[in-house]
Image (cartoon, rainbow, N blue to C red; front, side, top):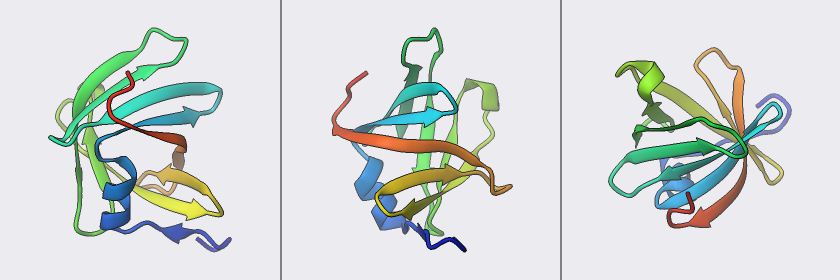
Length: 109
């Protein structure tokens, strides 16, 4: 944020991801995540063997929280920051977890 990024609001997060498939990257790996309208989160690695299903929610304090199998029922809450046309997710420690590359309507998994 010190470099000029802005934090997305809860409404902006909802508009960006709900009902959409998001292409994201973490390091050299790319993923598809579908955020269904009923709070089911499905994901798979592109050209990889990982896939999983969990759930997500958007908080009133401008974060998206999610839980997949490895989280063992625990929620991870992430902040979305936008700089220029780039959106990145950051965890509670301030580490970037994903860069969000593309947003497509519906389930594209």
